[in-house]
Image 1 (cartoon, helix red, strand yellow):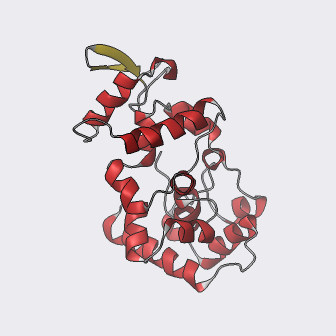
Image 2: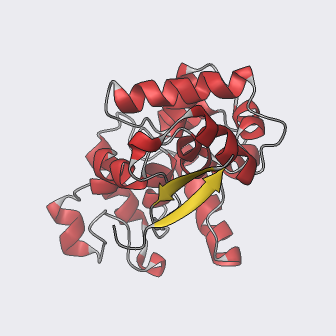
Length: 218
């Protein structure tokens, strides 16, 4: 595979893809999880709570051939935002999913937000990427947000609460040229994961960040 690399953990060598994810995923074993966790800053070994979440991800990956978004994964595991953040400080996809041995290519192909087809009207009026993200965040206006909300068929449309979050995301990006983490957003706007999920049913990156006109970084 192009750009293939390797990592040695506990004396065993594993092949990784260019993004640092296990490839092929069949190499996964508990030693990989423990070793990768340490490289990601989780010291002292994986706890029972870590393994509960890792086992959940692997069941989703192997049995259901999917990877849930972080909002759903936390809700199904009854994890609060701060609890998940404590368990996996490097995040969801690049932390928990990587430790669980889910490969990047699989996530790219199976998470529908990564292969999202934009509506014809959106493509006609705005310069968007194949994934439906604005190519230039300065092209954003409220109509762009309205068109996306129309795709989602939200019964109340674009609410003031949506606008508050969009404004926060855009201001944060314009000031820092970075996208805030889901944790930073929830803390700044006093949101729970469940509230965020109800406002943006498509999730954080493909939902809140996309509707705010922020760029997509794989």
